[in-house]
Length: 337
Image (cartoon, rainbow, N blue to C red; front, side):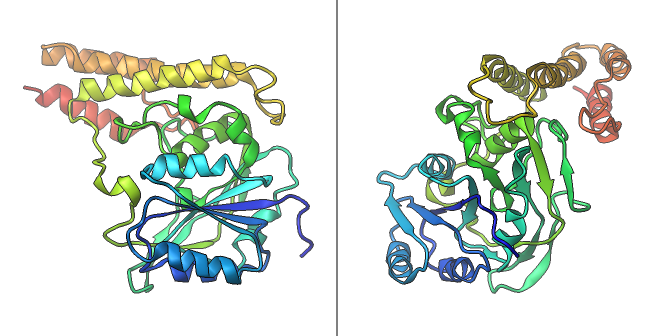
């Protein structure tokens, strides 16, 4: 196929990855369409990871830049700060322990010339620590399609290894001002959740229904300071809901702060629609919160009924009814202490 005129940078974040990284590097070297650069940011590894990278750098047929982070940044900041140094039109996140299908870049590059596309994602084949296939990681992809902006639940995300995105997304809003991570609120939101949020606000997303990565499952999928991080989300339902409301309001503040200069490269962006989308998501949470506050079980059940009437359980992305969410809230109301 004819190569897209647009360029691609791979951003690979590493930490003590010597066990698997050679297989990943070989898969990058064997791409049918080679990347324009590989940016590697090592999070203060203590094994042979950097030596393996330096050997690959000497033999590579495309530019490889290696950065060492001392002290370690943790995977969230490592991916995003390194991405800011990319010089290409598109960026692909890359995990150290996966294996790319040889035509991943080729398949994704078919969409690079479409100015409306902000992000490209795909499913994966899951493998074990011995590289044996153990299943599929579909990410709810059911076909190869282009999804319009605001097509996904506000709290959903695509995993970093599957994301290829337009570099200019990083210019929409400063990464150091992003909202808290609703999975691990001791940190700012992770790289993949941040890009998914921004990308679906300002442009279309391509879903390619092919497993373009072998996603390795093992005991140490996180790296860097991420190894010692606890994915902490409170079990207190009121505190958890308040956290999501706080993050939703931060999302809304981000949207309201954007001016024409921020989004000049994204012709599909509509501030009013994005703001309304987030406002509605926050309103749904606020309505459900009323179920958790009363001391009376009956009052909680009545408030659940009011929440149903208000549309609190209707998904914004596809208008489906969220039966599981309603069941959880009714269970809380009926069996609360």
